[in-house]
Amino acid sequence: MNWLEVTVNAGKGDIDGLCTLLEELGAGGLVIEDESDFESFLEKNREYWDYVDEDLRAGKIGVSRVKFYLPGDEEGRARLGEIREGIDKAGFSVSVAELRDEDWANNWQKYYRPMEVGERLIVVPEWEAAPVHEGRAALRLNPGMIFGTGSHPTTRMCLKEIEKSAAPGHKVLDLGCGSGILAIASLILGCESALGCDIDPKAPDTARKNAALNGLGEDRFTVYSGDALKEGRLRSIIGSGKYDLICANIVADVIIALSNDVTRWLAPEGLFICSGIIEGRQDEVKAAIVRSGLRIIETRNEEDWYCFTACLPCL
Image (cartoon, rainbow, N blue to C red):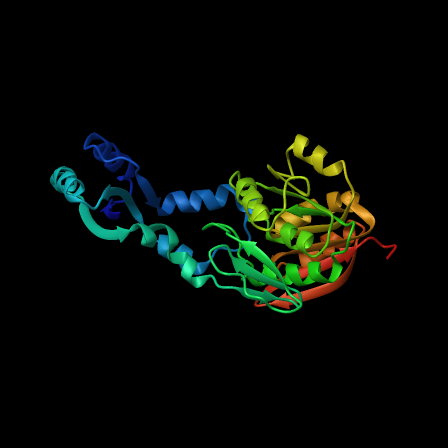
């Protein structure tokens, strides 16, 4: 089916009035894009981000608009005419674009292709045939539109470190698991079990589906939604075990805050692999890791991002 994407531009402070008008005119499923809301979201959630893509931020400058969608058939166009008449009378400007279902949901997939990582892995999109590469294990993945694919340098660095350390019998903790790529990679490479958690409530479902694509069930990979910094029940679940590998591909502030917990959760000969650390924050993270009682044994740096691997002092 084809769709009509209708964009109505609003002046600063006009968003609420515009939404009320559109609802009265019968337009549903409103999508609000507003610079002040974007900046407010960033400010209220500073502990969960350390870097905002400049293209994304630039795209929000001066933005104050509402979008809604109608079927691109004759009935949808007639409905658009009725709604547009009311919008025009109110003095708002309107633009209309035509979208196909595949444009709407799947265009991003054409940019995601099989990708070799390290010496032993190849990350393969769910919709692609798995290529046969001698000596490499396929990690099948459908990250969705908001989760990692393995192409970002922070994920690649973590995967390379996991590849060096994964071994039979190892238990893994993936903090901020997203698509589950790090935990799933560790299991494909021979680890026994993994526990993942992420603050995004959509993450567990995505991670479980990706695990299933690789033949992994909940007997080997368990995923929870929640904040490992604040939620007592989740922290209790995590703290009930000792982990041979702890991965945290998050942001500097969260890694710093979790460092002391990692020291308690790590098995005696375990490793802590952390990334998501932007250039300029690496010294703070390194200092926090050392203060927690861990020793950094490996540092990686790619494209202004850092990855540290640390262990307890006995190693």
